[in-house]
Length: 589
Picture 1 (cartoon, rainbow, N blue to C red):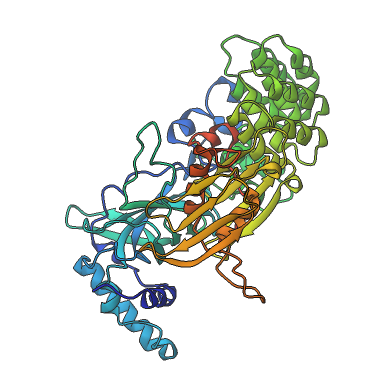
Picture 2 (picture 1 turned 120 degrees about the vertical axis):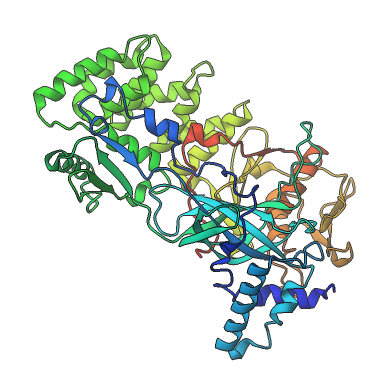
């Protein structure tokens, strides 16, 4: 029986209390689709990279030559949860084992909290509503992740009768590691993470030339997983030797003197690595530094090794990245050897020599990296932009990145924006739209280039308006998509946009309202919670992140705003590294 909108809202609010609702629900087979690997978490390295990245002649005499890495692989976790707010698109069906667990936990919670019994509907009523659906939930925790590290989730409806998860909200549930025990089921392991958040559906899929489609029974929760257990990395010595592991331990701890026990040799074969806070979300970079550290501190040994590596850097078939990392590991003593290579006629040699110098604090190297970042013909242009992102508090680097925001290549503009918010975060105006935990970040980036809207689809809900200081609507315009909770319109001479807010049945619940014509203010109006000020004026429409991105995309495709809309590409972190946010708007679970 379909429930009223009022009762549905009550259930959604009350359901947030049911934190431990789904513990142990792994008795039911995990859905095959959701069990597939998700996008590799930010900052991690793949198995193939881990096997080959720190091996070879370039790493001779380094930490990487005497140990191998363990615990770097993302840890797959999964569980089951309850999605609410589906407005009749859900399912009453639920596997018996999960159903009984949900009912049992709701009843137990009601007994322990009699003061909220009036707010919680009967457990059977929750599960028998078409406004809810049971979903499988899966994600991957990065190796070396600290507690509260966020990661993306994939959710999939358990019952095939579920029509759509669009607009739904996953109530808090547990994620565990499961050990398969044949087709009959799985045995749940230790609870590793918590999950919660709004379901995200790709709003740009329909209407694309590549015929991309969306499965309405599947969705994503951007940054919806929260790690609960510290995942330390392990270095395993290739030989059993206390002397070797202590030498490795001392080399690493001397590199990070401001952190306590980054490396801890607990046995003649194992060294535990604890990722320093500044490298959380950048575990791949931390491992590069660690594995390239030289084992010997003898000046004569390091001098000879530096000369050999500097010579190798100029060889046509040399593994330039590995050689550069090994030089970086030796330290500032290599600078006199690599400075002449800054102007080498081969661009890759010039770049990797300058990258090493910049990381070792040589100001002259920054000029070379800047040239590569500006050079459209440089094969290392995107890597150079990333290096500029690490040059924090440097006026020259941030000035170049601001210039690149006006590039004719939209991907370069996006990379420059992500780098700029790292190198000079104060130059990016950031506001939180909506209320925790369903809010998102809106960032305004001044630029003389054509206005560009960039939306993230991993790790964090964030919309960047590059050139947003002159981004506006272009009347006449009309946005009235089937199933959308909002309609926008403006005639040729209108100074404002007329907005209608609709419910899931298409009935107008608020409006017509007058919204600003400039795009930044319009986005804030659409995304803020639906409240009224002291004069009774509505100050927000409480639209979800994916809905707003979809509105911007449709308006852009109709030339109703003077901006192109770009979606985060899956490989953006291959060029920039992990895109750790300046500040997450979501609450920590």
